Amino acid sequence: MSDNQGSFSSLDPGNRILMGPGPSDMHPRVYQAMGAPLTGHLDPYFIKVMDETKTLLRYVFQTENKLTFPISATGSAGMETCICNLVEPGDEVLICISGVFGERMAEMVKRHGGQLNRLVSEPGQPISVKQLREALESCQPKLVGLVHAETSTGVLQPLEEIIEVIHEYNALVLVDTVASLGGTPVKVDDWNIDVCYTGSQKCLSAPPGLSPVTFNDRAVEMIAHRKVPVDSWYLDLTLINSYWNEDRIYHHTAPINLIYALREALILIHEEGIDEVQVRHNINYQAFAAGIDAMGLKFFVNEPHRAPTINPIIAPEGVEEASVRQALLENYGIELGGGLGLLKGKAWRIGLMGQSSKRDHVILCLTALEETLRLQGYDKINSGIAAASDVYQANI
Ligand SMILES: *Cc1c(COP(=O)(O)O)cnc(C)c1O
Image (tube, rainbow, N blue to C red; front, side):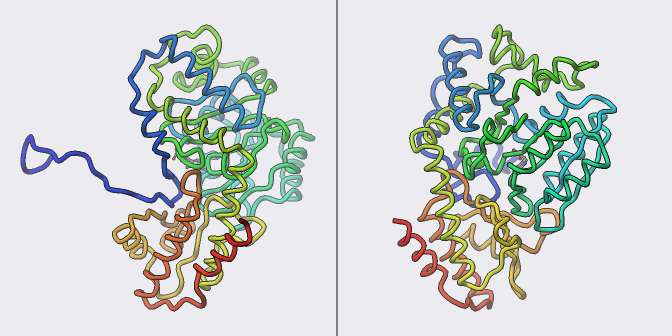
């Protein structure tokens, strides 16, 4: 409470440039959509909004899956929805771990009674096909979980070949695309991803609070044959599906305005085109990486395993990771992420996601880093701006 009881200033967080691991910037149209008048959660107008949101999600996930809709909670709830609906007590599950979010998935499998097998990659590396084959020879999982873009380390897990191998062993594939969908290709149907979830606030640039999921027929079938009820009422997919798809039976009060906002954010992606959106993310990543390299700074992950959407950069010797972030926030309004997991206190995590993946953001971020690092005694090797600018010139 403020000392001055009963008197509160009006809300004004100031302008932020969100370049951390999420949330990312929102387009003005998304703010506007969020403020549209509230309807009831079974209002015919809102039902139409729900149907359009599902169609747009299928476009972004590149799937025909009927069971495609947002869970009313953040990305972690999408993760838990997938785990708790697919895993029954005693079921064998293999989770591939390249960082904190793989660990989170593994923890959820344990809590929902699954028999957990862990496959951990080398730091800064994805899981290789060879490692996966070896793991699949020594257990019989019904489900294999993978994180596409591991936000804690910046590793991008190649998926296509690994999914084929998992299917050879007759397991279902679950992929976390919270930090990748909309920023780098994810083709649910072409790649035969059985189950996939994402988050609204990362590359989709909607407010946090929704977690779109998509389940193919094989996964729906597996749920239909469960022996025991799902051990969460709120995240029971069959119940949620009867609100989003079947009989429109009330399950919970949908967060109407968040869904308005997600719909608008997805329309923006549809207008630009999903392929074009990914090309934009890639060019901004290339320009940013050229700038970082020119300055003599180091990525935690080497090519070709970098997620273009989230970039852990090692803080150089003598530079204080946290005080650089604080200076960028105070002087430029730029939010970067700190290190998470094994990179805690050692790296910045710089996100180039959704509406934050922009040329002016990249140039401003490199400028702000150059200036701030200089004040901390780090002498850059070359200008990051010139190197980034060359990439943009080459891509006009
Ligand atoms: C952010 C993130 C999550 C968790 O999402 P929340 O919205 O914070 O619950 C899960 N997986 C990955 C890869 C993420 O980046």
